[in-house]
Image (tube, rainbow, N blue to C red; front, top):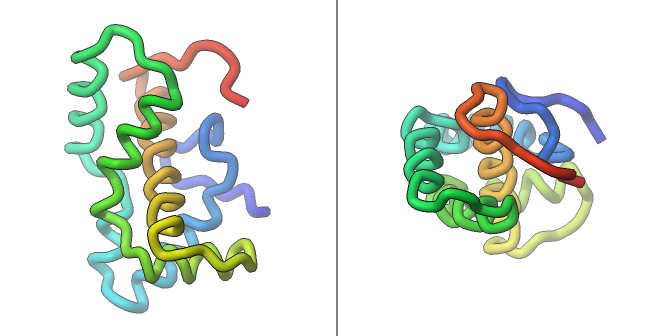
Length: 126
């Protein structure tokens, strides 16, 4: 697998960003706005901080699950399924592919927030 990472990604949560890079590549050929929707935006960081301010401590799995739900509407299922097929040579159902890509975006948001110092990750992650 490739080791490329997008800006502000550490790889501490998302082990493989290749599906996201493939998603962007394929999405740009369909409609650039599909690719643009699958990038981090200022509102995402605001949402994460608001989410965390409601609870003092949250575990990583809960946070990933909440952010995955938040990111779902920004992922095109057909493009996600095609990207995952090309990267892993495995067929994914449309909803599973959409969730997998949303999970990558959620992990990237947490990694970026950690790098910026907005949040602190404690304990082993793998």
